[in-house]
Image (cartoon, rainbow, N blue to C red):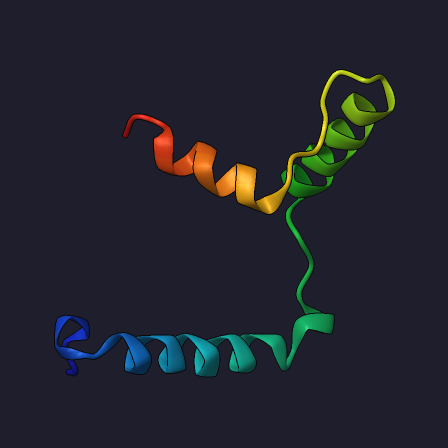
Length: 69
């Protein structure tokens, strides 16, 4: 079996693309789990009630990088 540790970053990204393409091929036959629909509804409700807000992608990345692990 191929060891991921020995792959270059470019090879790893290409592998991810190939896997994503394969998974996306039958996307119509895949249904999301119920918890996902509930999470989306909750997010929409919170946004409609001004209990949350959007941040830019740059801000989100900074928040994730700065958060303790």
